[in-house]
Amino acid sequence: MTASLVRALRRDGGPWLRHPAQVVVVAFALAVLAGTALLMLPQARTEQVGAPFVVALFTSTSAVCVTGLVVVDTPSYWSTFGEVVILGLIQVGGFGIMTLASLLGLLVFRRLGLRSRLSAAAETKATGLGDVRTVVKGVVAISLLFEAVTAVLLTLRFAWGYDEEWGHAAYLGVFHSISAFNNAGFALYSDSLMGFVSDPWICLPIAFAVIAGGLGFPVWLELYRRFHPTWAWSMHTRMTLAATAVLLVLGTVFVTASEWDNPATLGALSTPDRLLAGFFQAVMPRTAGFNSLDYGQMHEGTLLGTVILMFIGGGSAGTAGGIKVTTFVLLFFAILAEVRGESDATAFGRRIDPRAVRQALTVALLAVGAVVASTLLVLQLAAVSTEDALFEVVSAFATVGLSTGITADLPTAAHLVLVVLMFVGRLGPITLVSALAMRDRSHLHRLPEGRPLIG
Image 1 (cartoon, rainbow, N blue to C red):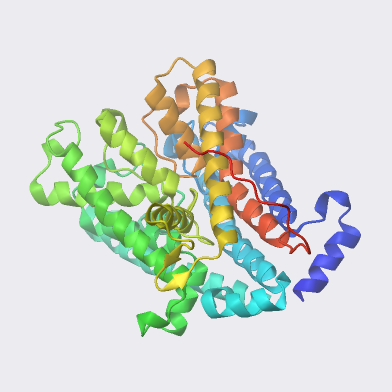
Image 2 (cartoon, helix red, strand yellow):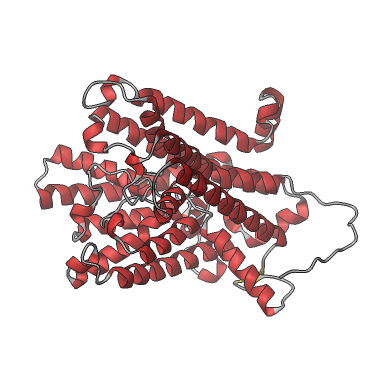
């Protein structure tokens, strides 16, 4: 089925659709344009006047790319119809990312040579996802399960804890659960979730939904198939789970310690509330744009640490953005092997394929280049500080949605830069890695070796 799909695309899609990853880009571009058109309708705004093109384009891109950055206040600017459109775009974007990334992984797996397939089958059991129907049904089931559980918990809390009518409580619960699982970060409150900073019944379900969406479908599929024993898990699953746990712990400790005495953030809270808020803010850079604290009041060191967490992101074939934790961990083990003088990078008792290390290095360096170039461009276009520009750019590229509060005040040209960043940051790593993997081929000869001086 996959092979016939590729042949059909190459035959009927023309020269611009010769690679399946290009289909992903075109599909998401069409979704963004469709969302833009819907948000420009007068019915989408509370004032019953069509939104300007750039505002609609920015919001649509942020929703489809499950980012969460906004240039207008969501609850006051958009009508219920507009909010439903945004919610639909989030669901389409999150579902599409998980499905298409998993399908591209399946396609790449099947395009490998026999020896590579046998090796990959032993190392990455999660890659053997089965057929297209299995992938689609699995993504739908996982998405609906986590969204439904989170929606029920939030609905009960909004109704019982805040005296919301059941209909409105259910609307709030469903909206925030879908936004959370898809790592979108759109909220129906002008201050995001700052009003619930001390409420674990709101913060914890949202945080765990963000984590669940960010792990990725291949991880959840493998956990479903073989929850025990852990030694039977693939390298991808073990790497994703271990890195996620470590980053969550380190992030919580860092944010809590850094902001503990800041009266504008954690300093005004009780000790239990500080711990809750610290954990929540450590989860959100994974890449959901909810915030229960004001990032504009945080210390510069905290913002820099958050930038690093945002850049790393979450798991592959999930709703999170960034360069992905597997990319980060692969580079870590590659550096460790080089420092130790070892010829091969190893992790979890396995040798890491050198091609995977090269792909990880390519993704990371291209991401750094995109962030640096975009930060310089934003600094030229807007009168903002370097740290604010860097934070905004990384938030857009890693599809996080956190902001120090400068998004709405940026000029139109800077907004368009962020639109491009959100789109490239969301789809770039997926299409790049799949393109690199599918172009992999063996040569019958090797050139003489050269060794330039390093350092």
